[in-house]
Length: 323
Image 1 (cartoon, helix red, strand yellow):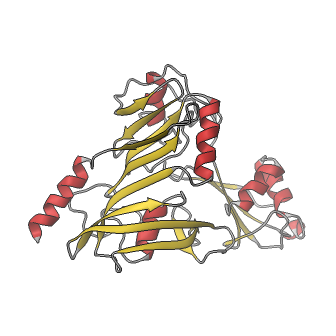
Image 2 (tube, rainbow, N blue to C red):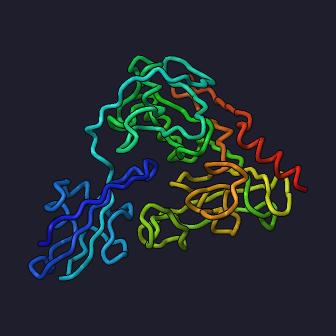
Image 3 (spheres, helix red, strand yellow):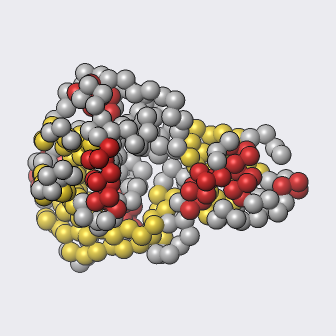
């Protein structure tokens, strides 16, 4: 077998390390999960989970765990980073919208990473939460993301719910899976979508050409998950539009990928609209302004909304001034 190649991603939001291997003659006919378990030290169960999620490619094509290798096959596995990084409490101010003994809702600013990762070991939302809650957070998601039930990208601002105990975490995660957990966003897009209201329904999976990106595929494509986004144009400016987006699913980069797919990427998106004018923004003009869920203990339906942050308002002022 050739020397193993391990490529560590430098994008904290990618949250994955990438392992690459080349199969030799002696590896022919070996099952994919057996081969990768031997080479990475991961259990076969873990490898199977990664295969099922589309994070294992053979010659750039997602393959199942029982795929048989051929000499010369190029393999790529993307996996979570090591959990050895310990998140430390840091006294970082938080904009808290709601808090009780079970959970809290926080308004994350643009530019803050949600949880520690290689390259971002501190200054994250988790570091701030550990200080604020004195370590009293659920841990069922692992050492690097205690309490984090769902996430938003570093440069997306807005509301996140955080669990303080395992009961709350399990309940909230189940609501997300059942699509009863409501999430709405506002964004500024390049151009104006037609029609002014609509639904985008595709598969979303890792890009076949750039593993740090996600991409849209036909529904049912191996290695992808169905993603549904509803949009509504609030204001049309010609060169730009201000829209509201409702997630029916919650895939990685879902809104950003779907807006690019219809030809109207999010303003200043550094990944999916690179090279376009940014109106002075350094990250995507996207805010998670609405969150709704059933309280895991009281059973009460809770809904929270936050105003648009300054970077959205300033961009809209520039756009309106240019009309």
